[in-house]
Length: 192
Image (cartoon, rainbow, N blue to C red; front, side, top):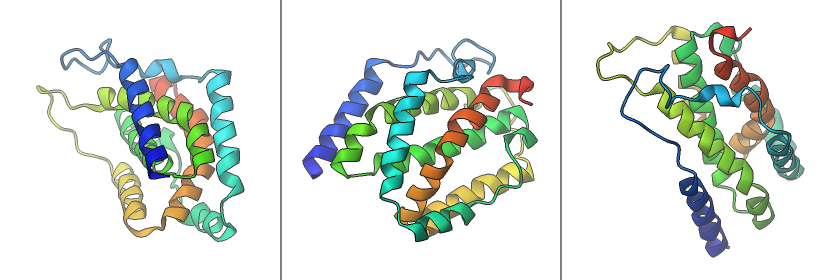
């Protein structure tokens, strides 16, 4: 089983490297290397792959983890309440948690189903990293209290919650992340 997991990880990493995200020198966020607008909507095939993975994961979720996950990270609102740059940071943290949790699943049936979703999430995450890299000449801007609370809750959940609870949270949160939050960040100032 460990060998299967290692083979899947190697496959995912190989696929990710097969389609590298172009990275130029550090340019302003509006520059060509920050291409988050491409994610205003995912293709029907990508959404179907995520739906299949979500359904498969949900079948094995204990109800106690589902109940706990639904209360895990109460939101003060949504990404629209944050500034544009802060939305990207919040989404990047959510995507990173999702990648971590889904990437740690070892059930052989899930490992196969998760291949395409993990590849897509990795690509989204790399674009978000590109868009949120601090510029060498820019003064760091302080985070708002809302973003600080958001990031703190995510970090606290990773430190305190059980893997089952995090798995349930990521699963329940997946389509909000892919359709609402990702679309909002990709829309920039037009997020409404």
